Length: 288
Image 1 (cartoon, rainbow, N blue to C red):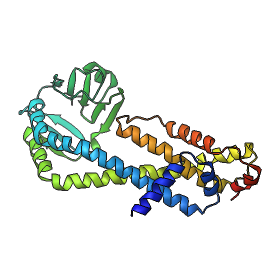
Image 2: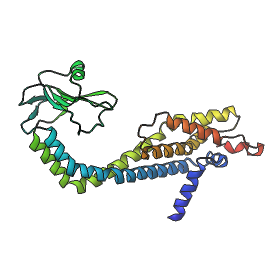
Image 3: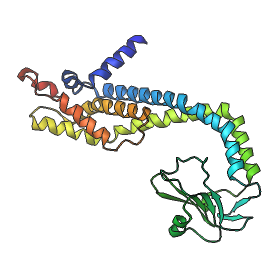
Image 4: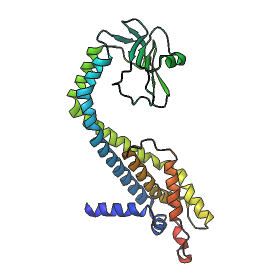
C-alpha cells in the first residue's frame, strides 16, 4: 500500500513539471493515463469530502438540534397554516402576510440584507415588480414559490410540482424531530452522496479534455514535433491534474466560486512548460 501511494505521489509530482515524463506518456497505453486520472479524481474527491465532513457535519447537526427549532418558533407564527393542494397555495391569514427579516436571521441570502424574510400573497400569481417591491428573500403566490439568491437572481418554482401538504408550526417542528432521529442514517448517506457527486464532477472532465487535447496537439505542430492526437489526449489527462488539484485546494480554503476558465489556464501553463524544445535525438519521443 505504501509503495502504491509512493508511486502515485511521484507521478502526481511529475505532472507539474517533467518534460521527459510527458514525452513518455504520449507513447504509453491510454489505459495507464485513464487509470491514473481516475485515481486522482477519487483522491481529490475523498480529500474534499473529508474536509467538508469535518467542517460542515458538526455545524449541520448542531443547527438541526439547537437552532432549527428556535428559528421555526421565531419566524413561523403558531397560527399560520399554509395549504398547497393541486398546485395552488392558500393561507388562513389576511394577505399579504409578511415575515420580517430580523437581525438574527441568517444573512447568507444576500450581501445586502432584504427587509422581509418571506411574503405570502396567494391572491395573485408571481410578478417581478411585486417581488422587488416586497424586498423579500422569498415570495409565495397562488401558483409559484420564488426565491432570490446571493447575486439577486430570482428562481421561480411552480407549485404544480409540489405534493399536496398542510404546513404549520407543529408540522415543521415534527419534520425537524424526524431529521434529528434519523441523523445516524442521514449523515452517512449525505457523506456518501457528496463523495459520489464530487468524484463524478472530476470524472466529467474526461469529456472536455477531448477538446483540450487540441492545445498540445497544435503546439507540437508549431514546434514541428511529432505528436498524434491520441498522444496529445494522453498528455492532457496528466496535464489537467495540477489544475484540478489547485482548484480543489482553493475550494477547501474557502474559495468556492472559481472561474470556469481557471482550469483551462492552468492546463495551458502546464502544457507550455512541459513541451520544451528537445534535443535532436529526443525529437521522436513525441511519436505515438
